[in-house]
Image 1 (cartoon, one colour):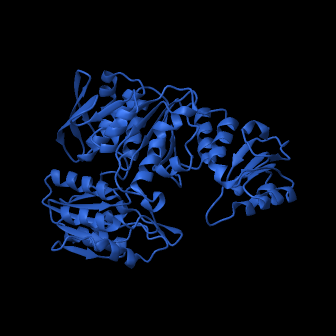
Image 2 (cartoon, one colour; image 1 turned 60 degrees about the vertical axis):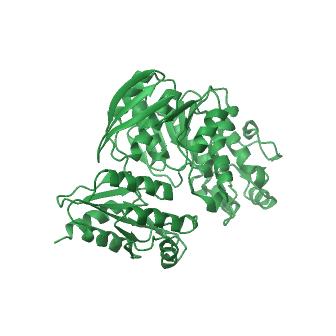
Image 3 (spheres, rainbow, N blue to C red; image 1 turned 45 degrees about the horizontal axis):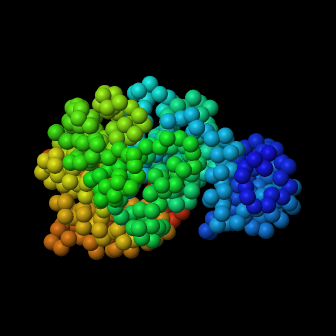
Length: 487
């Protein structure tokens, strides 16, 4: 019954038997509760008649107009004020789905850079330990034997809890999930019963949404401050103390596990870094182990260290963590090599912030590349202040910088490139090519044996967003085409 959903505002015609929840009227079926999510540009309540026609029996609405539409469509309804919606909806979901993560071991990863790789490695380590484990984040929703694409790193609460319930039904016993700042701000991940949380770092990103670094940090902080209070589970956080924010939070939130290169409960040292593997040493509270991780690039050392800390936070013994770390697999679109017989290194990576681009290019330089040619762009309708900063990061570390389109969305691609190129270091070599295919082909054509072409910003994505339309575009495919076109 709808009454069990802990909705504090008046419920009208609430005697409907609810069998499923959906925020998409096209997915409504017999017995559905249609949740009308408030939206800046669309009144989702307009789809109430469609949901009713497909079998929905009730709607959760945010205005009197929604109440009227529900009653006219013969639906039961509950009215929530828009400002209370996000807080209420996770409670509805957790109650309806009977806390699907209660019996799972759940670890959440937040931070600016490294979330995807860290969560991916955790999923691999959990599976290697013998648990049926799932991953949820930028690379999609990955159940054992099934991969599914997602629109958001962390889906909206209704979709998220549907997925968690599905995972429970399919026997998943552990979950590694990214937790984005948007999701934390909007209460999407509230109600998940986390056993552990990992903080990777905090650098500039998403200021178009959060407005300031302080608000951005506070959104991340909710994973450690607010969400553990919602459940009865014991929660252990892990903080990267190489990052100044992580260092502060490691003191503020106790007990916790700290990790870093030179300080922390868990310490690591990168002994040898290659394109495809890293030899590293680990030290944890007096014990030492040396492991080889099948990942390339210096920055992946930090990701591996974060994943190891996450496993410790979940309660695994240090010796077991050291045995599980070599069992991980490379992450698609993260320092992913495009193999060829031309003697040219081609690396595709998702780096799309100034800090991530710096770390990526520093890793490439550390491999001894004779020449570094970088192709990158910045997304439209996103934080504009990072555009010149990314150009500076690229041009300071590259022999040639090719500025191109990323996902222009509704902005003029040439205008974006102009803002990006304003940050190119004076005297450095750079080119502007709006068409991403042409830009990648140009970069590859400039490379000689021993050079490395770095294609940054999109990584695993196989599309480009122009206007509001997605068109197929995969940097890995474009790089292969460019290599094959060489004479």
